[in-house]
Length: 143
Image (cartoon, rainbow, N blue to C red):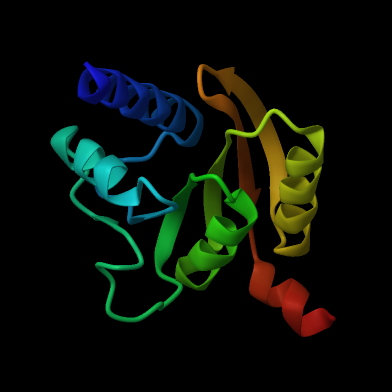
């Protein structure tokens, strides 16, 4: 029964992610967090061919255009995803904590990384923030 509930949770997370990010099956996606492998397999079953986790990538090359960040510590998972995300990328962050402090920390960290928050959606497991980053390397060079 617990496995069925976990599968439903993964499906809902993937549904929200796909609804917000609108990835094409050819987009390169990086998934970080404690459930990254399960979510990776779930996306592959849905036809997304270029999905990876930090464990399955040999080297972080900033080539992924979309990130899916999950887990109990979304700030740490976001830091783990950062080296894999391109300068023009999108990220969806699942915040499972009910604490507003965690949400504010994630928002602050996204802004520090050059992301602009576009949307937030509640789901059964918490709250998903969706953000875009465009031309981040230009901002880094200017600073």
